[in-house]
Length: 459
Image (cartoon, rainbow, N blue to C red):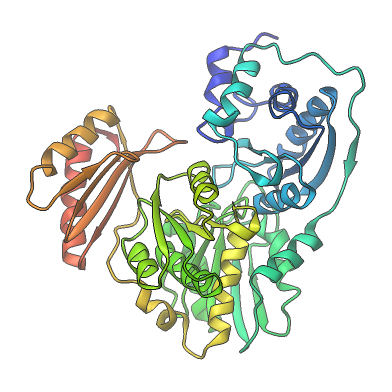
């Protein structure tokens, strides 16, 4: 059956493939994707994992069939988190494909691709070539000898490796983990099961269920943290960890039930990594709190600012040999984890720091939370470029203001900063605001939202 090239092209995003199943993404397309992927990356062997969504096993199997037909041997690791797939890619030294739609609703699915050792693939680094082959409907012909498809469980090795990077020892902690019915329901027991001497684990929504019966597996939305916040308080826990659907992002809740800024966790991990490797470079994206580069510099490190998105972070880490990178979206990247992001490893760093001392998490993080943040606020607008231009025109001539376009529009002032940027994966304009105090943050947030939502169709 002929495919609409526009529909096929639409599932290719900036650094992954994602769409509604089966209207935009089906097993036939996944099979062609596997063949095209092997042709572009030139891989004699690939590793494939998938999440708990009902459509994931079928899509992953079809991709494996396509990759095998192209001549590559395929190692199937089965149910996995995205960082578990990155571990397999790094550990085995082969390219990888992870079938997941991350935090998106149940009707979506997709695939995150990487080269060997978890090196990223984005539009300009191979994904565009893969897209063109698939859209043309003419992927490379089958190889004379198909590759073998085998199974290999890496969960135990993954858990053991993470704990070599962030050992947890010290006082006993009660830890509530909200897996959101996502893949942390598999990985958290494997990791925390090795920490029974220091961690009392309280599981929340560990049942793997890609229909997300309790709440969306998207912890950046405050509504999806409410159950974890209530459980932390009810259990008298020391900390709560929330993961997204594919468990590559981690968010914290402190002992009071208060959500922790991902920028504060970025600063905490940066301090730990700089203590281990003094003078290192730390990557932070441009919507991270300005407290992060301040603290990195104060600790003798070199802060480097980059665009939002894992391919940009990983590229900068490779160029600068950065030891760590953090994004305000809850992604955390580690040089010693093949520069890949791991929500579980970030959570282990928080537990390690907490167990080493005798102060509560709120006290431990207080020094990193220098400036109030608005959080990410999304609006759907008719013309994102026109809206960004209107925001720039409103602020550019103010005394003390500087403007840059590294990623969307960033406006900086000694008392505040804001960023307005279009989403890479959704039809949204995202606003982040930070001020010297709550009043300044609120004023700049409301003023900028008024400018943005003058053109809103849904906000």
